[in-house]
Amino acid sequence: YHGGELMSLGEFGYPYLIDPDNLSTKGVFNYEGKLPGNMTAHPRIDPDTGELLFFGYDVMEPYMTYMRADASGRMLQVEPVTLTGPSMVHDFAATENYVVFMEMPVRFSWLSAVTGSGLPFKWDDDAPCRFGVMPRTGSDADVKWFDIPPCFVFHIMNSYEQGDAVIVDAARYDHLWVKNSHDFFHPARLSRFSMNMKTGKASVEQLHQAAMEFPQVNRATWTRPYRYGYSVVVDEVNDSPERIQDAAGGLRKYDVQTGESDEWRPGVAHTPGEPIYIPASDSGGGEDAGFLVTFVYDKSRDKSSFCLFDAQRLSAGPIARVELPVRVP
Image (cartoon, rainbow, N blue to C red; front, side, top):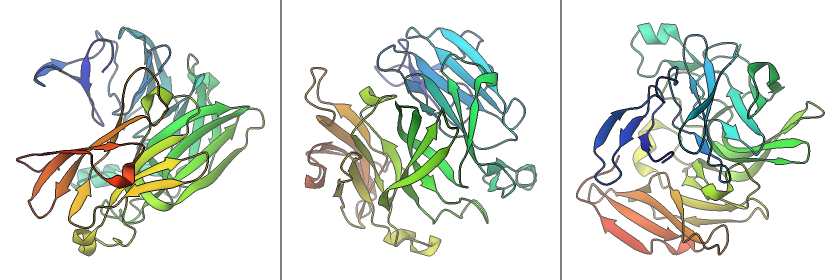
């Protein structure tokens, strides 16, 4: 929700505007013709300025374009960013002064596309793996690239500045889709990428040993130092397509300052989706003084529930549950 409009976003294409009262579709939106092409599903809103920071990627040049809109939704900047090829770039990071782009070894494959592959992206050992840091109001010429060990990232938890370093916490895969688009059974771990703007050196540190995906934070901490994050728990025992029915996931809360965590594990009959954090109020009370909400699929009913959790007592389970007449995939 930005500039008075509720936008539905996807991997490619323009946003669709949604009526927040009845969720009906109002139509496509392209910033009065200033949006040159695709828009990411993962923009960032600066909690202080209200600016919307976002990008789009493509399989033809320019492979990436960075964009910035003011709090009212007026496009301020459209800047192509040079990549070496058509990498899949699902998310990006933003700090108080910088934006961070990822170019990783999952590349668009024309061969897969023309042969009818369901997902025409594949791991490419010859592709670079690097993070590009650019001032938020800068240009392509200002991007400083940092080489990192081969990996892939779908989703960022949060990012911020610490001294001379730009910090990005994300769900890191060692590799992905090496064989085909079903090669998804080497789960991600929460990891910290640190890019030193003075020395030009980068480092990677694993923050938690257990598998996870769909990281989230209190969005009032976007672009700023933070303490708490949340994610879906990924079952590491589920290491093959044949055992997907035995997956036992859950939700996890992280204290990235102490390293402690808290989990809700409902068992194999219940599968939660991506959680979203909602503050309890605007009056303060702490970074985690709020709620997690998500849909939880009940295999025994073949239907889902909308569940609400106290973010300070996640392992206690849902404090409210609305049973739905359908399954939410």
